[in-house]
Length: 393
Ligand SMILES: Cc1ncc(COP(=O)(O)O)c(C=O)c1O
Image (cartoon, rainbow, N blue to C red; front, side, top):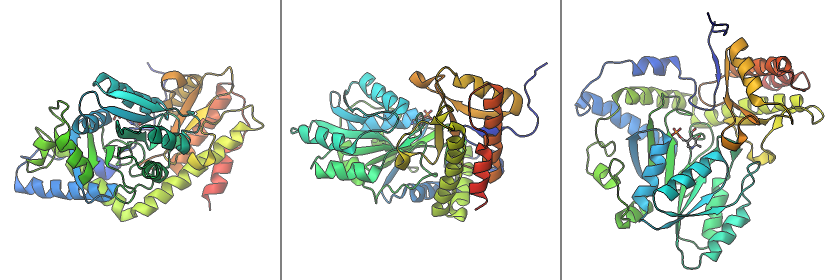
């Protein structure tokens, strides 16, 4: 017999995968069809075109049966030749992992060091690029929204710094936890490769990832010689689906068509505004819990860079975040995100991305506030009240 409270709906304040709307769940349940059949191709083309609108690109899109890691690998392998140099902008666990992957695949990795609590100084990136007089750096890899730390980096400023340095490197942006949550405009912002995944802002099951690719990047791909198999864009370009070497994930496309409908019915600017509003409610709650500085606090120290899709919360000294998380799930059926890698135990994360409304976020905040009390973590009461005051508008 379990003592875990499993009644009612689980409040899923997870920073990905996220809540899947009921209509998307219904859509993915349909029977399989042949993926070359005209009836399915119509749905496929709608999903493909819709995703390009969400990305804000008129250029190329390549999709994979893989989680986000697959799209990371696709971006590197299609644009580079073995021994090439990439410059990774340090932001946290996910920038580290992308850098590690690039190293394992045989590329030289340089890093613009950044404080995990606020991200890099843009001037450091500009200086690094200006020092690369021979233009050895082929690509700059940036995680738009660092899901481990809750820090969002200003991609337009990063683009401007690359341009100001007169450097030809391609700009690759990981939007896995920002797409469908925050403003993003691939073509307008001059992004060469956008890495995205199905399981966060797009409100779909995990398992499909993709890369939006500029025409400039496709030209670079034609010159690049790294070995590639499943992720080969050249092979994809020759296919009817322009993506997916092998079987196309039919159910995912039934879901994608519905999730694009939901996003566009709400209107992308409204989706962005909703995320900002719910994120702000979370921040107001945490700021109250912080009290005079002895309680948990928002990990990101730069107010301009606080993420609208996930808030990472730093525990006070001597308190383990896992004790709060386990009370929240065991007693109140509320799932939060844990601290990753070197942040394990030190932080927990409240995800506020995807299919979410006011009472859902208030429910999660109430569970967390009760869990802080049960776990004996010092905090000032009234965080949920502050969130309600803000949300009632
Ligand atoms: C910003 C970011 N990049 C990359 C990844 C890795 O994606 P996946 O777990 O889908 O392979 C994640 C996963 O959470 C992420 O948040």
